[in-house]
Length: 89
Image 1 (cartoon, rainbow, N blue to C red):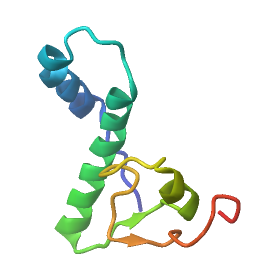
Image 2: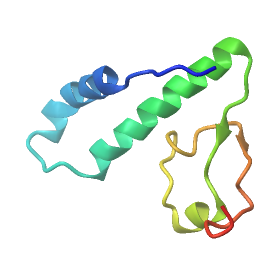
Image 3: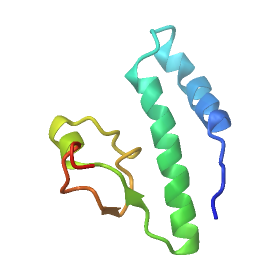
Image 4: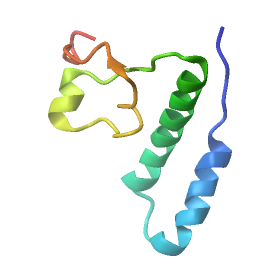
């Protein structure tokens, strides 16, 4: 089974809350990462609620380059691909 959980409301709330601080600055990686971090928080909450362990999808290439989003794509208690390079995945 799976669920579809929308993040647009959460994302827009973050943007609205940060608007006075970001104050007209151009859209950047900061706003993009909010989407990933919103998903990460929701997935962690679901895992905690039901006693699951969240698997993250980060791999060795992402870790080496710093490409993953901390608390977003990198969220999870177990990195099952952590010792694999992108080409192996």
